[in-house]
Image 1 (cartoon, rainbow, N blue to C red):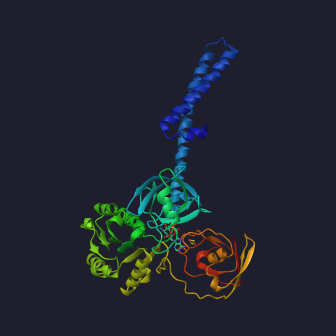
Image 2 (image 1 turned 135 degrees about the vertical axis):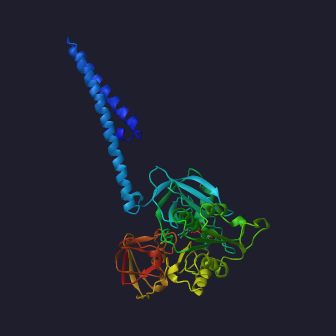
Image 3 (image 1 turned 90 degrees about the horizontal axis):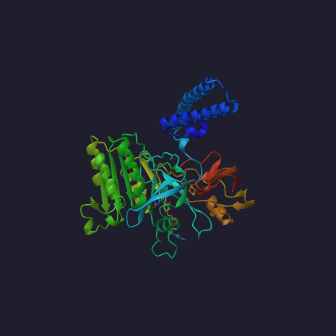
Length: 453
Ligand SMILES: Cc1cc2nc3c(=O)[nH]c(=O)nc-3n(C[C@H](O)[C@H](O)[C@H](O)COP(=O)(O)OP(=O)(O)OC[C@H]3O[C@@H](n4cnc5c(N)ncnc54)[C@H](O)[C@@H]3O)c2cc1C
Ligand code: FES
């Protein structure tokens, strides 16, 4: 009964409920006692009335105490969550979320708003991080796992938003269009349930820093940048941020008005939109024509940084976009003598990136063959460098391990290394769990490797 009482949030209602229940119980007991004994003395009735009143007061006291207990437990949870860096409100593995809103943002990109099915707290996230989702697609023989950047920064967090580009088949290739993105666009609607892992990823902006930041994206690479710009606007409005975005034209430019609106409360956000093929109706909505490239940084953005920072061009750069865009900008920044440590990159797939979040391993391959044991599948096979990564090798041997990004970002392919050592071709974007490895970017480093697969 105390448990049920504690669930009543309104304190007055809780006290009245407890007092009335005690009063009613005491009155009932007194009435039964008087009825059974049938006392002649009037004072017996008085004792019954006093007992009921006493019970009423005691009940009110219980209501008050229960309130105090419930409040103190909420307080201790909150203080722990802030001191333990969100450990208290992060769930493990998969948790069901419901789509509460679906909204088109451009010709190709649609936003999906997620809320937990059973209520409860959201895990906090850093602006720039991503969510991993699992889709049960009837035609697919196993669940499809994909990662998507969180594209908004609501405070407090009362939804997660993912903005997903519909991936069509590459021109000239007779292959199916993107599995997950088309499923999201065509068959996911408000009310659909999607399991998600907690937010993660190392591509995020340090909102407390005062160093000017340049967020450069093209296409759907805009998604983590919106979250970063909004977080900076709210948490560190003194800092100057350049939001540089390249799009084909207004039709393909997602969330333009939303980003423009940030400047209303955050004048230190400097926006530059560059359209490669603008339409007449885009006039006045973009700042220059061409691609978001080194030239734009050199001619426009860096001079603006100098102007607002007493001649200093020191800045950190965040890049996210198509493989060609990333490659050209990374080379461009190197030519502009921007230190590697000031460049942060997120690749959505399909290309190689270099930079702080995905530095290349300096180590050389040390074995020319290795005995690989897939312990759970009871299979052993001989690996040579031609067999590629351990994920590729597992697939070639008939195994079906989970994966998503295949580039060391999402940790979907993480598995336990029971024996031996592996070597990373590229450093993982975030450290795998103790004793685990990311098989999509690793190869054997020892003569024998035993994996929990
Ligand atoms: C950290 C991170 C964050 C991300 N954030 C976002 C985001 O915010 N928004 C977003 O839209 N995406 C994001 N992505 C990309 C996303 O995870 C998916 O990779 C993307 O949606 C494509 O998945 P898909 O299942 O639709 O396509 P897939 O089925 O994986 O196909 C990808 C492409 O390959 C083509 N293809 C299919 N078969 C072949 C073949 N045999 N040969 C050659 N090509 C083939 C398809 O036509 C398609 O164009 C992110 C990725 C990462 C790693
Ligand atoms: S599949 Fe994403 S880290 Fe390996």
